[in-house]
Image (cartoon, rainbow, N blue to C red; front, side, top):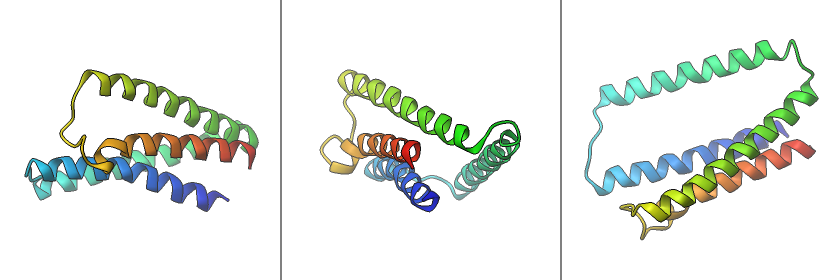
Length: 123
């Protein structure tokens, strides 16, 4: 069950990245390899810190409570994100509004994260 969750989170997170890549590609903006490496190392370090912190927290709370709290937090964050994203779309016009990925990647990611949270809550 946890592998399904990991795969779905990976897909949802990378949909946003795909939208960003398309935006930079449409503007013909190139990112230097040094900057890409720095971004990758920062992402790797923060992921390690999150995993380490999660492992340390499991000493103090039960796995079922951790699953419930994580699922609830994921649902709340995605709901908040979707609400503010809709407000942002009303206020701004984006470069990629005419493409499916640019227009809907964040919405798809948000709903996918909510689905994952609900799935984990009842799994």
